[in-house]
Amino acid sequence: MNSKTLKKAGVISASVLVLGLTGVTLASADPVSAGRPYAAVGSDTTQDVWNGLTNAGPLKTVASYDAFGTPTVTLETGKQLSRPAGSGAGVKALSAAHNPLNHVYKDTAGNAFTLAPEDISIARSSSSPSVAGNDLTFLPFARDAVTVAYKDSAGTAALDLTAEQIRNIFTCTAGAGVTIDAGGKPVVNGITLTPKLPQASSGTRSFFLKAAGVSVSTTCIPAGNQTSAENSGAALANEGDIIPFSAAQWIAQKNGATADTTAAGQMIADIDGLKAVDPASSGSSLRPGTLFGNPSLVPDGAVGTFARDTYNVVPASVQTATDGRSIILRNTVTTLLKTTAGKSIITRFGFRNVDYAGDWTKGKPSGYTN
Image (spheres, rainbow, N blue to C red):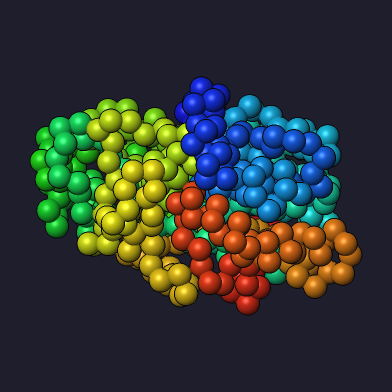
């Protein structure tokens, strides 16, 4: 269970008044009411905004389950399985539910669970497809940006790193203002850093490594430093710890839209002069900065581009299906996201609304992954 989930119970009562005024309820690990015909699983990055959309917003037909929490989850259909932890696991579970040739979902321990199409309808993903095919569609959801969070209790001026410096930090390579100390650790602006990564199924991890142009070495980042839940300040336990972090999640936590896992001395970096957080915003009304890019343009996905679209993954057949279940699901991941209420919640949770949310022409095809 990640620290966000551990803290939720303790902060809910203190946050009810504040969040009630904004019309957004604090994210909860699992749906707060039963009887919802659609289930969503997967990404930790978008789980909280999805909880806001489904528990207090326009998507009340969806039961959205967190990436972390109890080891097993009981779906609305009564089916039990190991909780899909992260984007990759969520897409695999969706694939198992809808792949006519293989309905088996296997967790990281090798436990197998047989799923049916009605068990899981949506996978939340913070990364684009990794498997070729036309069985699933990754529909644009909202814009995020990935930077790094780090612990510096001394209060050194916030880091503005170049893409090259980030690459050198996470490969423990000297150059571009990065030095390596006697223990093999990177040093920037006098801060000795210990690079860490989220767990292997993390969409934030896979996106960050591609954007930074990093090939992971256990010499630089030991296996024990590659197990954290994504977007959790708990990973920054010691001075100089540094880890990829969703800027949207950082903003949402600081805004009180979800439990704040960050602590004193933890900071978020800008990249190449682009701001993770809009400097004109403050307090509990933080907004995305220039690192998020243009909401009208799809990020190019090249090395050095740290803005990313997040996705809602559904079976490709939903686009043209005429049965009632598919029509409602199609409206859920397209039209309802663009309502005033939907957009307001997305903003509150730190994401930038994109003009093409739910646009099938901007969707990315994928094959089944189970």
